[in-house]
Length: 353
Image (cartoon, rainbow, N blue to C red; front, side):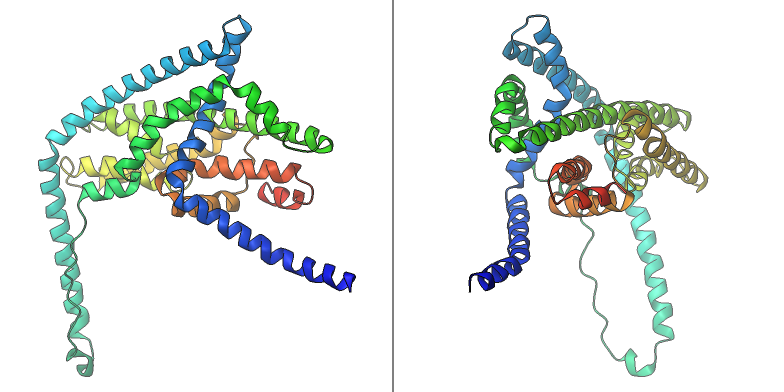
């Protein structure tokens, strides 16, 4: 009887695991306003930790060093945001002109759709012509709604901007105690493996964030110079946005087209410049993803294309735009954990195959 009970319990384990995974994903979905700032803070803290460690080695207290580093980074980001905001203000002043061009383009496209529908209706069998076609009453959402839908609600943005700096400071200042307490959560026989996994995650996240920051800077500068050569207005703003969007694997090549295409509507009347912009930005995306990323980030983030694509789809669906940013480091961390967790090694090998 006892053996049969064990068999029943063993058969129920997969179902229990599926339920547990579903509960975890539901928790991540409904608590995204809490989990996302925490994950962003972890990424930034891993990136800044070597600087704080250097200050600590020259006998600066860790708390003071963390405060100095956070103030310096905050000032740098504030300066960059100020420069971008200046260019954005100029763009917003000219927005009525661009919105008029977009309205004309939308009207022309809608006219072509109407002509196509009439052509289809002319060859429709007589029995189906008596049916009343469904009227199209929905209007396309304004650009402002698209932007808010892409970056999340204003509340979420304020949560991130308010709490992330404090979270990063506390993580940096208390890292040794947090590190020790985390290892002590596990039994003695597993602590060496946990230490190894934490060290690998730390190295991977640090190189990932630093490498992506450097690649983003390179792509922004190259895009800025390219838009200057194309005589596009707001080249710095376009270069900054397109350079950052180009970091998104696969989807970034298409997303980076949108800002220059939008500005080009008011300047270009032929298709040639659009093709040039699309080709150059796609080339920059390929170089950044396949040349710069392996050279700078190295093999610390070793995921196959299927794992990366599935991760982007899932976390993008779960958390929107911020999910696309966090997808690869989350998947890479999961791979490291699988590599060091007994029984999960095959899954880790599959993710890196």
